[in-house]
Amino acid sequence: MQVFTPSDVAQRAENKYLSVLIAAKFARVLNEFPRDRALHEKKLTTRALEGLASGDIEYQVVPRRRPA
Image 1 (cartoon, rainbow, N blue to C red):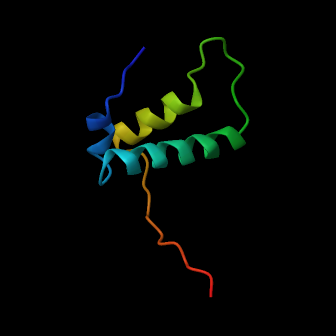
Image 2: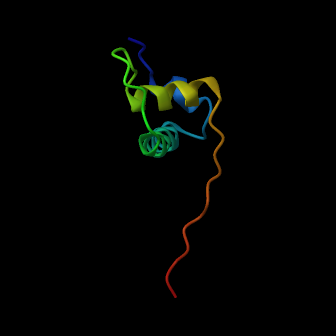
């Protein structure tokens, strides 16, 4: 089992909080796709953190619009 520290994933994002949010949102996207029914399938959060740590995930921060 691979362990991801906050500094590992923060290298690809501005800070560790943003990196966790990016990985969580990407795990939700992965959850929408059909999964392989293999016995040794990795968890979605692990796959998302691996993608973020390796630099495979591209993201863009969109500022929130305030209601008028």
